[in-house]
Image (tube, rainbow, N blue to C red; front, top):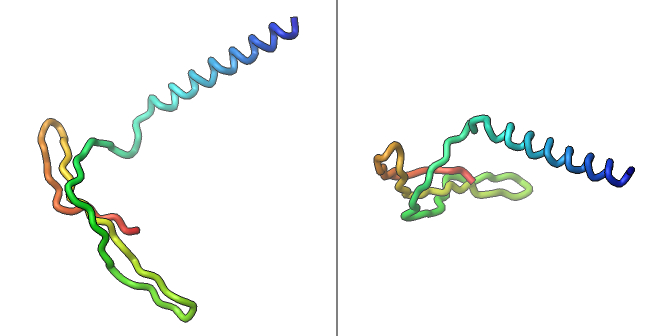
Length: 83
């Protein structure tokens, strides 16, 4: 009897987990996603950081991409991301 109750408890826990996961995925993400083609990427030095103990170099990643939005293909010259 206890074994059956254990199986039922595990099954109910699994169902509750699935329902919670589906409920959480139903909310819109604050970030929009799209599919894009990357034509070119490069790393660009934008500055340096110096101190008495050492230093560092600040890079940005640039990419030429093409993405589809609302049925219109757009080519974006540069997207920059500081590394």
